[in-house]
Image (cartoon, rainbow, N blue to C red):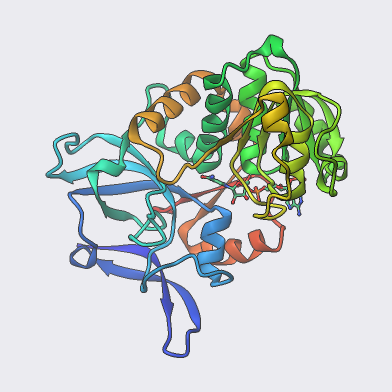
Length: 329
Ligand code: NDP
């Protein structure tokens, strides 16, 4: 049986090329579960992989796509049987193991989680890795005891996928959210998502002092670098900063002062290798917390054949919101 998939190849002179190919099922990699994919998404990482703009892919040829949702069609894994609806995020899929921009995938059953009740496979990918990562960040704040009555929560990189979901989730849980953005023209959108105030990201992104005026009970940081350092320096005594991103940079030009003088916690968030129980909790929480109209409104649906062109646009910053790929259209 053959199916369609996006394939990224590297030539002998190291040129990257991507094309839509017909693949035989026998070509699928090792794995104990075969999934008929309904939807995948186009993340920044996927765009880098498809265009070859950064060395995301570890072995070639590779089917990109770091997440997908679909239905199990074959399984020798104890947890899964044909007909089960499943989601996959991360685990190096789309980087080291053939991924979601394909009509079929063969994966390790340990990587899958069940589609939470109340979500369709389309809605799961409308939330995607961005929403799931945002939920991990919010759970990291909650695990450290940050409560709505403790004060304001700062979300940096607010207009991005993770930032927007973090605002929606925090506001649904009753937190007062302050959104830091470089696109103040999108303030109305951020307010609609639940931000009570927007600040210009330049307030956070320049080199700052070791300690500043205490303001945040918690922070979801998608940006890293000086922004993360300043976020730590302005977090209130005993507050928590959840760090998940590096949109400004992977450096952290900070001092230990917020940690040793104010008991601030810096909580790292990784979605790729997060343990399965944490993932399932995050997805169950997402299904309970988010109203479909919140995230469906910011989704653009494209066909698998449009993924290469859209990847180029995404890297040029010409795509707003999230891109869900219908691999069967
Ligand atoms: P997006 O590209 O959708 O959003 C990033 C946002 O960061 C932008 O929308 C912009 O927000 C802001 N930004 C961009 N450049 C800069 C800059 N130079 N300085 C300050 N802010 C900037 O990415 P995602 O939301 O999908 O991901 C956010 C980050 O989290 C990324 O770094 C990504 O790699 C990382 N990530 C990490 C995961 C993990 O497992 N830890 C999982 C998923 C993502 P605005 O326009 O509002 O200023």
